Length: 101
Length: 190
Image (cartoon, rainbow over all chains, first blue to last red):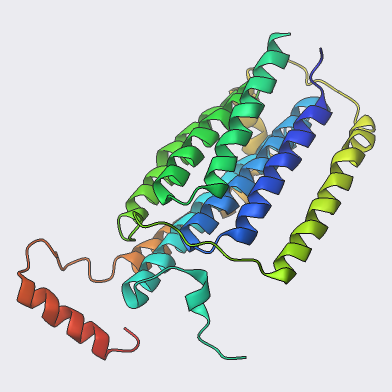
């Protein structure tokens, strides 16, 4: 049984769907970050698979840059989250509606 | 044959780990399941011949990102159960729409991937060497920009999280902590 590009693309789509469900149903911001990590990793699998089957290293390069962006997003996001928690004592998404509209 | 076994094993493990991450109500369980899923994902990179990417995945995600999450969770009260959103009709409708689109994407993926011909690279160097050659010639400018972006992110993280780090709660007695909290409550924006 040969594992082709389709297998990897379907797996990547399934993982992306799991991450998307997590983004939609999570209320805690920390767990929302976890779901975004799942989204980025699903895309990384698709990049690496296409890079392998297409015979081009560009996909792997993009995966590297995605990892770098994920790391910096995490650093800034956790910093903001710590500031928010120190000030308000909660990181629930529903409590962040300061504007009435 | 072994590739198929490895693929299905790690696919099952990754999907189950990420499912736990998304559905569990304990933040610690979500963290550990996410770390396990990250390591299992690196197995796909090794299967695909992207050795360097797999090593980077393990080092960056389970080494740096998970450690950062673990340290960040010490600031939050992560032991209590996480409350979930209750049935919002718009979200249900949106999720159903997205799920339908994703099903279409799954079934159209074979059509898309048939158009991609498998051209294997000329094997003369290992994966790490090839990555280095491509990264430092064709993608040198994005590489430098990514380095500057990481520096900016580091400075932003220090500036945001490093406030009041000179105060140690363990070395202060109870009255000082109460006084500090009252001072903090007086200020609307600190």
